[in-house]
Image (cartoon, rainbow, N blue to C red):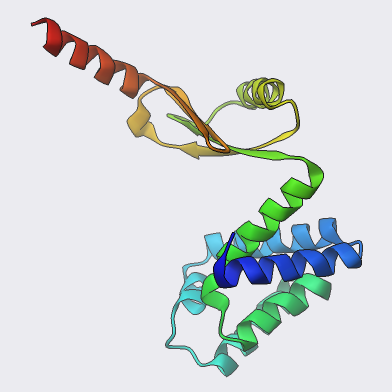
Length: 179
């Protein structure tokens, strides 16, 4: 984690740690992150340099108030807006999440599947990854129909591709070599 987002994420993590409020800050950041994902207008406000600092701060304060986000997370997001760094906020939130996971000994994994897994299947994936990692695993599911079936797991620097698409490509290459 480097750059502006890394420095801000580290500062926020240290503030939250000192105040013993890591879980509260995480919950607020998750709420705000969900708001960003759901609103094209908010995404535009954050990413566009066309808005003045005053406009961004006013809009962000109104959103935070409406969402009930205050305290450390609310002050942090407001501060980021006042410094014209909203464009880096998603990276800051991701960096904060990584620091929290590291502090709690949780490993992150991204699992790509062809279709949304059932609750039972998701729990099986979590349990298997926990056995492999030897610790709790935060699983992020990504749906990509292009893999046809199976799954692709990225955990740390490791990646296991057990997708049907990759297996079919391997068979196709083997058939070309034979014939």
